[in-house]
Length: 468
Image 1 (spheres, one colour):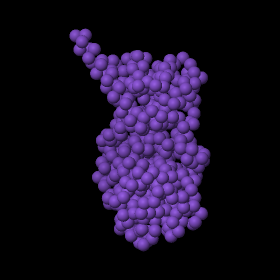
Image 2 (tube, one colour):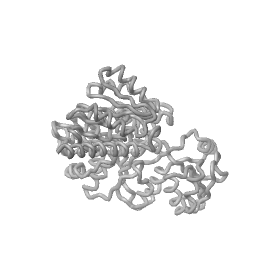
Image 3 (cartoon, helix red, strand yellow):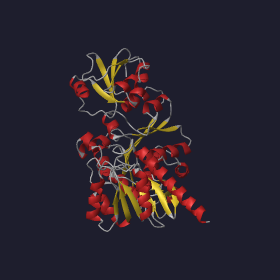
Image 4 (tube, rainbow, N blue to C red):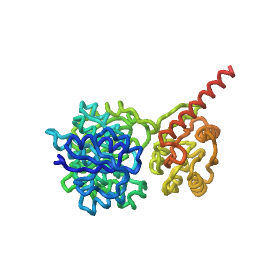
């Protein structure tokens, strides 16, 4: 990290660029920033860096390229840098290297996977803080890792995407987990094998490798990418074996870190302590507990932290109960694997789904949950694909596919779902798809759902008042 007087090129002027440039300047580097979006580039005008739009080759004296994680390795600029022998890293790798310059470098506990990352990192942060640690959730969760390192925090609960991991080569976590793996971002990585390899970078130098026994990819990645001398810890939604965390009746238990794992388990928490509910979130809680225990957190802090955890928005949030029907916003379920976990948490569901599937198949999802569906309400670009899967695998499930052009598509979807639901049902927004065909993002989609549900509840309350 001897960058004093060196020329560093920053590829991308978004969140990463805004975080990286001040750090590089503090290290004495001369910084050039490039981006294809001139307006976004202009937002960095006050950061003491040269701003050059649309570079396809690095300047001749470039010593290092720091790229935003969304830039593909096939981008002409990054290809040119590699061909010129210039190292290309991401902001996560830069944060790691800077952290190692501190007298007491922060501990990194790394979480990745296709689904559940943000929930798990939030649970982990809560557990660490319950233990009295100076801990912060950072990374892909929204708070840049560089800012967390600069803030001097002692323990980092780091959520990393496959994009971020692709550009990270030397990070050495105290503990790491790949929660699960399902088809996603294949347009960026090219194949499941490459996607898995990027996730596996979380384990390359890890001291304790945590894996999901119930997920074949998680187990395989741990086997193929963990260092020989790393401690291995599994978690399972069943009775755990020695070296694992798992479930016994209504308890989360630890058979990995106790005094006698071969013959006994130690109680971590009750299933009722875990929010949001559902098997996938029990798995997330066990993963968070395993990372925390690998860091030395005591048993009592796990229960206290899980009880204190507040779920992030748009992740299995119950909005209201209207006429005996619960309405739940899980707009963050943006792929079939995430939607599966959400649907399996409920016995009888009116499912609101649809959007951009990005080439993912929904046949396995529909086949797995067809018996739980009271009905389905579909909207968005790939709603015909989901409708076809329902006709193949759950032909008895009533399906209402909204046609394009509705002024308020989410209001129409919620009203249609309400008409199909019965007391005791859940109306669940778990789209299994991305949102950009109709909304600014999954957050806007979730906001629209919650607004429509509140309007429905207000209407029901008004009708009740009129009847009295």
